[in-house]
Image 1 (cartoon, rainbow, N blue to C red):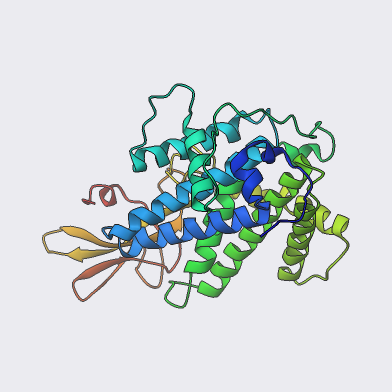
Image 2: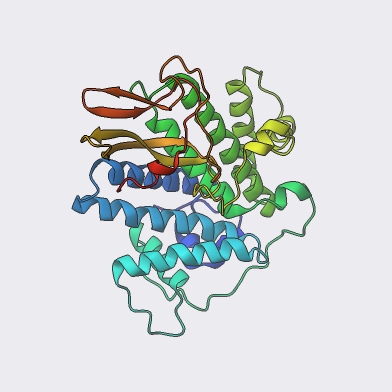
Length: 333
């Protein structure tokens, strides 16, 4: 099949991407699906042989997305480093030979991406760079965003928007709606940033505008022009309310959430008597940023101590806030 000629893009300096010509929207779609499949497999069947394949696909597709975004800005060392990290994980899983000093882990990732799409194998190391058209103009605030952060938020929010369902504790509909909005916002910003780094990529600019309107529709607003939709995306991110800004957690958060504000938290213990409780079930919960606090007194469900009991089990109380008591941390994992 002969492809119609397309506008050369920065990533086309690399033969793997020149041959396949993936759009940013497609790279995001592949990465988020691979991330979702990996996360579900680790939760449902961590020991299955297929799980390793899902993990490998996640590193390959996430690495390719980061690589293309890094190629669109030669000065983005953070995105380039994140690409290298995914490539190293891929090499480790494949037990790849990295003894050739002229071939980097990123070269290996590109080779595997080309092989996945059944393109002729070519020498990928030492290919000429592409200076691109990014000159630092345009939306300065948008161009300052961290690519690894946007990728992580997009993939994570997609996973949770697809995972949360009727079995979710609490108000699952509201939680899923919030995760869907987080996904629409960060995916739109990722598309917007990619288009800003390569103005010749008209398809990604159109996809970014469509993402902005998708967010508006989710918020109960009407569709607007492409420029107004992009403004809405950026305004919704950069002009957060004070409460929303405070809710953001740093990547090195003391609570161990990695910046997502969500941590896996033990919800149910097996009561074995004599004060011995063995954890049997955990779920994602709000990260407390490493600051313990007591369950409010007067809770109608637990009386203030933070737990409820039934059928030989102890459960975290959802009446109000979840406590973080010292002896919780002593329970074996």
